Amino acid sequence: MTVFDINQIQKLLPHRYPFLLVDRVVEFEKGERIRAYKNVSFNEPYFTGHFPVKPIMPGVLILEALAQAAGILAFGTLDMTADDNSVYYLVGIDRARFKRPVEPGDQLMLEVAITRRMRNIYKFDACARVGDDIAAEAELMCTERVID
Image 1 (spheres, rainbow, N blue to C red):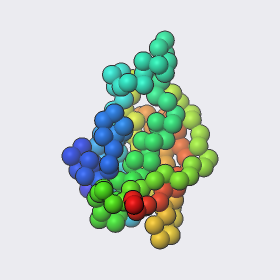
Image 2 (spheres, rainbow, N blue to C red):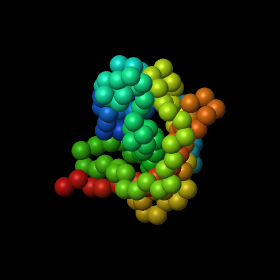
Image 3 (cartoon, one colour):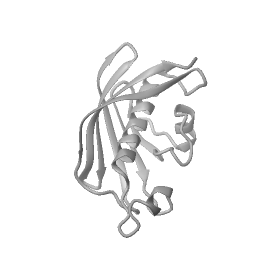
Image 4 (cartoon, rainbow, N blue to C red):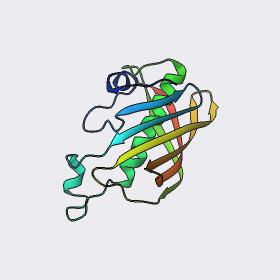
């Protein structure tokens, strides 16, 4: 199993603060699956407005964190790094379900597995957990696009 720290993640993804939502990869099986985590901190900018009385991580950002983990899996599978000529786009989300709020202080475990690959289109099963509880799950589709 391969482990990636934040420096290796930044070589694989073009995202940067405040939109880089993967802190560490703890398991990576090339062409198969990835487990990574996001440490959810009260200092993150969206908590001031979502919601001031009871802060929770927006569901769309949980899905984005899962999509970023999927991007690391795709780039790592292809032995590619992020560059100025291509990017992986999230092109589809199916069967998204949110089952538990994610709050400051939680550690969000991101689990993503490749279920299908056709040329440069990938389909993934994705699940975000806090401890043993499922916070969100979805099927994601991503594709590589060459930037003009």
